Structures are given as C-alpha cells and as structure tokens.
Image (cartoon, rainbow, N blue to C red; front, top):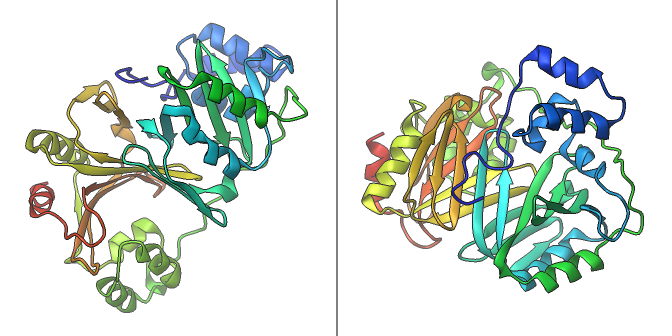
Length: 365
C-alpha cells in the first residue's frame, strides 16, 4: 500500500439511489456484497460494510469456504499469544485506522508484552499500544495476492491489520502462525454485537472548571491526562474548551498540513498517533513526501504512509501538558462527534525535554 492513494481501506461514497438498488436486490449478505462490488469495483470493504448496513468482519466471514485454500480463515485462541509470535514474521506492514485516518508503518514487531489486557509493541519502527479487551474476532485473509492478519471488535469494526510484505516477510512463519491459531470451526457467517455508544457529555456548568484547570497545571506526565478527564467527568473536546487558557489554543483545520510541511522542510522528527478502539499506532521519525489528493492529505514515505480525510477534521487544537520534563506540546485533531482523529507531537523520549524547534514550529501555526 505504500505510495497508493487512497489505501485499500479508504472512504468511498455512493448516491442514495444507487445504494438502495444494491441493498434490496440479492438476498444473502455474500450476494449483496458481490453485487455491490460489481457495481462499484473500486470500493473498499470498510465502505461497503457501511453501505450494506453490516460490519467489515461479517463481510469477510462470507468468504470463508472452510477449505484448506479458503481466502479467509477464522482465527481463534488467545490473540495476545498470537501477537507474541508476530516478531517471527520479520518485516511486515502494520495498519491501524479510524473512519478518517489510515496509519501504515513497515517494520518488524519487537518487544511485545502484556500486562492484563494492555499490551505494548516497542520497536523503533512499529510502536503500538494495545487494548485487548476489544479484540474479539480474527481472520487470516488472502486478497488480490496479499496476505494479512486482521482483527476486529465484537461489533465487527476493524482494530488492527498486519500485512505480509513480498520478499521481506517470512512466509513459512506466517503460514505456521495461521495454522496454529486456525479455529476448529470455520463458519461463513459471523454474529456481531452492537457498536458501543459514547457517553453523553456533561453540561459545562456542572464541571468544576477551577479544579480541573488546577489539576491540569499540576500534571506529572502526559499519560495522567486521561485519568484527569475521568476524574472531572469531561469529554476530550470539552476539556480543551474548559482547560487552562494559557495551555490550549484552537487553530484552523489547515494546521495539520502546515505542520507536516514545516516538519518536512525543517527535517523535524515527529510522533504521529492514530488510534482505533483497540490499538494506537505511533510513527516516530521524519516525514518527507506530503501529497494532497482530492479530499485526502497523504504522507507517502517508503516505510510510513498516512492518509487523512481533511473534510472530516472539525476541530484542531494546540495543547500543552506539564510533565516532569517540562511542557509537552501537541496538535490534536477531532471530528464533528468529538472523536480524536490524530495526535501530532515533536519527537521526544521520557527524561528528555521537548525540543525548542518543535515548540517554535507549533507556535507558528
């Protein structure tokens, strides 16, 4: 998928009248998907699932023949144990996305560990935070000559995908991994649960704003910010509205393109966080090739691709959080529903202060 615009999971829309003809003609889900693909051959599975009123995982299940050469194989067992074996594959492509951003990074999975349902992958190239309580379904998929491991939540939403790289991934290790975790039963349908509903945002006048601002100013590190949100019962975007005015600043939604272009021009290494419900994927390093294409803003580098649908960005904020190492500054993007789309930081490590060059870059936005 490197240097491909858009990626295999990109957003795709169809007129309502065309959607209805696809939805109402065939009877089975497999037939409906086949009809949709025939009508819209360039469509992507995530978008087909939305149009057909189902999930990506449910669509994949319809391709499971149960035979040894099935293009889709259901996986079972402890996915934590499966992920611990992924380093044996060598270099792969890791993909994590939400509705508006696709984050792709090539490299090996290294230093995979878990503490309860929380997991880490801490390689220089592939850097992940894993939330295994959401990982319910897994498949090995062969499509258009590409092989992958794909994982989904209980409602069938994609959480994380791992793609084989031709000439770089150990195919024997991949096939052995699929065989080890191959489910005993291989059904061609999948029962999924409802998608979780976000909690309603509390009214601003019910929040202890003074207490919240004081606690923000006293943060010991960036990770404590999420506990702060829970403590005061505020949503992510509400926190930005009510936060200390000297530490938050709303900027225009073109700021992300300006920041990426400035980082590329200045050879400024950055950290780009993109998350699904079950995984946060982080790129740490430079960005080089910034390419707008239609509604998409893309980073197209050899080992890192990013695809952001700019029209989905409803709010952009420059955010500062105190830490033991000094202030840490980020650019944070949100959609109209308040969902976080992307976080952009300057490259740094614990114990090392943030670079002044990064602060200057963000100050100019």
